[in-house]
Amino acid sequence: MEIESSLRHELITRQRRHRAPSVSIALIRDGEVVWSDAAGHPTGRPGSPTATPQTPYRIGSITKTFVAVAVLQLVRDGAVALDDPITDHLPELDESVRGVTVGSLLNHSSGLHAETQGPWWERSDGLTWKQLLPSVRRAHRPGARFHYSNVGYAVAGELVARHRDSCWFDAVRNGILDPLELTRTTYERPDDAAPGWAVHPHADLLHDEPTHDSRAMAPAGQLWSTVGDLAAWARFLARGDERVLPDDLRLDMHVPGVVDDTPGGRWSRAYGLGLDVFNIDGRRFIGHGGSMPGYLAALRIDPVTGDGFAVQANTTGNFDLDLGYDLLKRFDELSPRDDEPWTATGSIESLDITGTWFWGPREHVATLHGGVLELRPVRVGRGSRFAMREGVWVGLEDYYAGERLQMHVEDGAQYLDLGSFRFTRTPYDPDADLPGGAHPDGWH
Image (cartoon, rainbow, N blue to C red; front, side, top):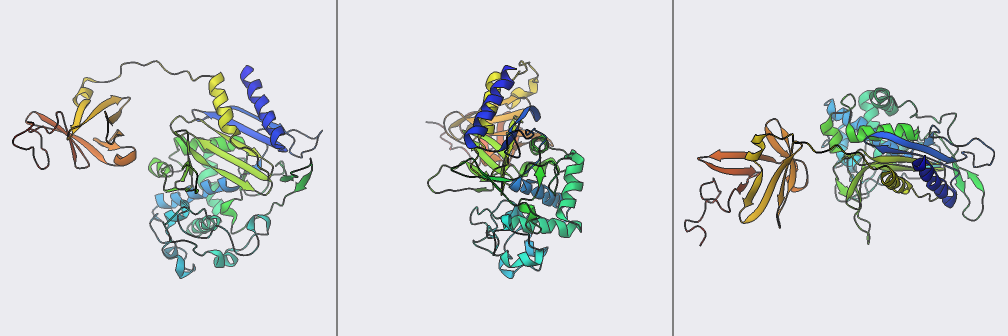
């Protein structure tokens, strides 16, 4: 009860401070919801029903994460490759976008303009695909920079629709929502959804915000959902489900492809395939934010621990979505994780590869815990973790991500071959297969 009352107190404090009509939130630990609550009245009026974690809100650009998975399902099925020019699949697009690839649409490096020509699409009746075509044009050279493009995701949605011979949302529902049982995630506005409001900046007054069918732009921000469904979606993004997407493609979504380089600011946000990658004090979170007139939302999860949050509010104002980080930290303080005690589960064979290795004169130490090999420099140099795949250690991160590490024993000498780099048990071991050989004078 102490935990719940503390969290609820902070939730209501933030709701009042930012004057959001209502806020709904779910905290996630190890991929499961451990606390959820809501504050305020969806109507913004006293005496009306209060919000609950089951209240649906519009999720805005979190829609893009579903569209990205639908595109990757086409990759899984061999219908599309991430390196394909989008004009190979949608030949009616202007010749100027020929250099735009499928993958660049997903990570916002396509160079396409951010928004449509004409009226602001988020507040106007939606366009047809044919009406949208003049807006599909380049602002930057493909691959040159991160440039967030709602238009690019409209194109990605049309790609899905074209290959599935159906509406893009039908593909999302059949291939994602149904298998994961995300029953509260919809295209149309649910009857019990929170209304969209703008709050006057200087008075306690409300202004109705429009909600409409975005049509061709719908893949950029149409969907509605609840924090419960979003938490389940976050669990999939972090932990996976082979019924929806193979793990190799899902994990590719986590890899930062381009950096959001805001002038004067620290690099804290990058973008993978359909996912924001946030660096929060050295801790990585994946997810996405969302906004449409009258609504704000955020979804974040640490893919290593499975800890995260989903938060939604029905306001166009500047509600502090970092509330989720703060409440997650508070929960961890009040309810520390029960870690399993260490036990000796290794094998004597692990000693063959562990211990001290040298790349030239640079000392490294290899350790093996929980089936993961870690090779780290003692002072300077590159390091990485490695996982065993089909009899070979494969790098998981940084410079050696995807590179193969193999141990060799020849005539009693040992060495590691890591992407052509040789690590030996002593510096420049003359008995090891050392490229270029050791100088005949040895150390002197």
